[in-house]
Image (cartoon, rainbow, N blue to C red; front, side, top):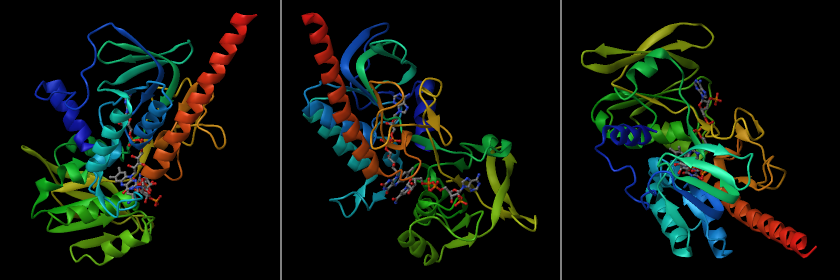
Amino acid sequence: MGLFLVRVALYIDGTLDPYPEGAPPMSNAQTRHSKVLIIGSGPAGYTAAVYASRAMLEPVLIQGIQPGGQLTITTDVENWPGDTSVMGPDLMVRMEAHAREMGTEIIADHINRLDLGVRPFMAHADSGTTYTADALILATGAQAKWLGLPSEEHFKGFGVSACATCDGFFYRGKEVVVIGGGNTAVEEALFLTNFASKVTLVHRRDSLRAEKILQNRLFNNPKVEVVWDHTVEEVVGADNPRGVEGVVVKHVTSGDTTTIPCAGFFVAIGHAPASELVKDQLETHMGGYVVTKADSTETSIPGVFAAGDLTDHEYRQAVTSAGMGCMAALEAERYLAAQEAETSLDAAE
Ligand code: FAD
Ligand code: NAP
């Protein structure tokens, strides 16, 4: 997410071309129609694009503000079948190239409003273009969660981060704190040991939910200390210049508080689905995940399919997202074929 914020900041600042990789969006107030529109460029979106292209549906894919999705902010991915270890950003570059090679039109743009109550569906983009489509594949993934503390907000970008890969370099020789107990927290903590003099992982329980292999690496790393059964209550620091100096942690049962000195505080407490665009139009559950029919990517609106972390509160893996992207494209193909058959029948009558 740090990268995301930097991109947005530089884009607003005018010092970064917001569309460095994909084709530039079309000029203002154009309309662009496709049979299948895919929103999102993570494993789900790119896999859907490969399948939809091979079905000759000539899909258009909108990349969003994080081309390549969440894997672009991590380092080694060790559970992508076929690669013992692959760098997340490299894998996503390959997926993009694959989708492009199969014939997907990939556009660097961001959708700010969707209208699912009309046919064709309408997707309004930051560029001013309105993308219309007969079938829609939503693959907008997930975004990092924050603790919601005012002090966390105050120091965001000044020592508080949700992306070790993006910001870890700034903490060479310094002490940092990571909060969370899942795969992300443990991976972030391990990555930070490459730079920091000490990494303290704070977790609210007495066991981690991260994979055992990651836990072993964490516990065997001499730079890491784990503080169990504590929550973070406040981030403390200076204002001139603004910077983090420590975090106040509280024991979950005794309520005792302690301040852990640190220059950087990394929040790794999970991800929430990026369902803002559809939360009032599609059925959602479990904190915003888009509901799909059993064994399917069909949503509550026919012709709208959802794949990947946007709909998956359980597995949230690259490979499962890719699998759902495949399902969404195959289901979109069947849906369009059925629509076409119906139209031909109506015309014949
Ligand atoms: P995402 O990868 O989240 O991509 C979402 C896409 O939607 C982005 O391209 C974004 O730009 C786009 N988007 C969002 N909103 C809009 C909009 N309004 N308009 C246009 N586009 C939009 N999984 C593993 O299997 N192995 C790992 O080793 C692993 N490591 C991880 C490490 C980290 C630090 C993190 C955060 C996650 C990791 N994961 C890993 C989980 C994995 O990254 C996700 O499960 C996977 O990326 C989800 O894919 P997705 O396609 O659903 O969405
Ligand atoms: P996660 O698995 O949901 O874990 C979130 C962690 O943060 C949990 O330990 C949780 O504590 C803690 N937490 C949540 N809210 C908190 C709060 N308000 N205060 C303090 N702690 C809080 O999230 P994730 O680690 O980001 O992983 C997301 C998904 O991506 C998972 O499916 C994961 O497997 C996948 N992923 C995979 C890899 C990999 O395969 N190598 C790497 C990264 C991510 P509790 O444990 O008490 O609930």
